[in-house]
Image (tube, rainbow, N blue to C red):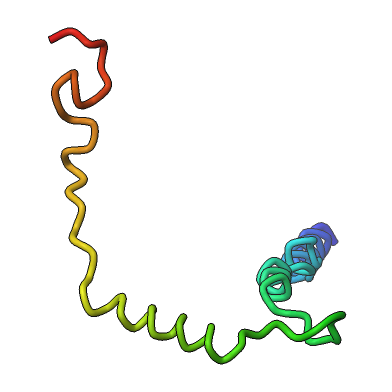
Length: 96
């Protein structure tokens, strides 16, 4: 009889470990990704006022300016000398 109670208790504990209890984490898994996606998308519904657009001349100027920006790239900036210099060039205390 005593062995049966131990066996019954052992089986009950083993089955309790297999039970599924949904937690708050499981219920809301992926909610932050869905929320971020919804916040980054444009509302496809109707908008008041005229549509957001450029006239042909302004659009052509913008595209031409963008394409010209690749003809002569900006010179690289040396970041190792930022804040380095003598007192007169770095805005120091003025002592020389």
